[in-house]
Amino acid sequence: MDEIVRRAREGVSLGATEICVQAGLPPNMHPDLYTDVASALKEAVPEIHLHAFSPEEVIYGAKRSKRSIKDMLTALKDAGVDTLPGTSAEILDDSIRKQIAGQRLSSSEWVEVIETAHSLGLKTSSTMMYGHVETPYHVARHLETLREVQERTGGFTEFVPLSFVSREAPMYREGKIGGMRGGPSGAEVMVTHAVARLFLAGSIDNLQVSWPKEGLRFAQILLQNGANDLGGTLMNESISTAAGAVHGQLAKPNELRSTIEEIGRKPYQRTTTYGHVSSNSQNIIGSPKLSEHVSTAEHVSTALEDDGHVSSATDEVTEHVPSLDEVGTGRFGSFHELIADKSRWRAKGVIKQPKGVS
Image (cartoon, one colour):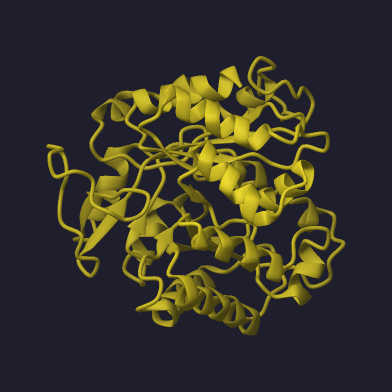
């Protein structure tokens, strides 16, 4: 817990406005681990926005603590959780989920957690992982499900298409799923963002580019292809990196700003729920008119290993804190250095280091 709090304080010192916690599903997890993490973070940095715990983690926490989904979400909210990441969605079609995530939550369970969270005043993001075994039909069903949920609750803040990164993904490397692709083509990524913009227009109006998966240069194309949000400075990003993404673990605020300005758009910093960061900030640029401007956010992400200890990284975008622009990536350590650092990970041997990495 000390390391989680230390990372949160470090992120805040560099200008983070949000902490994103992806805690995993430790097999022998204490029933109160998730609420304890939330409480510790809010006590240490009460001003931070806590964006924490996916629908899958909510269901697991409910089972471990013998609570209902509603009671689990209420406990997390009382502990300090402000919003939830709408991850673990993959493709919301159970014929696909049985192939790629057969032991995980069902589409209906994902929707139940999301709608219950929204009913309690907890907004969420929404995501979709594509480029594996799904077809355009399944993508359309996924988008339709999100749109229907939004019509009922109005609780989604944004939609984030996530390209399947296959390089180190076990379900791809092991070759056990017939017909699995190694991720979407560039053309498919463009079409997916454009279709999502058209399909969700007037329902979920914020469409975020995941630069760790697509890279900053391709992100520029996608920002002209329907997206209006470029998120994540990502100090020590590890989730995409662990799957084999090669676009880095940190994008500094100036890099994100330049990425947006080079295509003739104006960046501005948003809050987690897409409000405008206080106009008192001297570095706020632009306005929230989404047709002309691109928003960014800033947060620190923390993940936990199976034993409940810290396992990785950070995730967020800053506009108003120049100090992060001056920080070298060495401050946070490389992905493999983090894995090898027993004081941080306490998971020696979880991932074998490549030759030449010390």
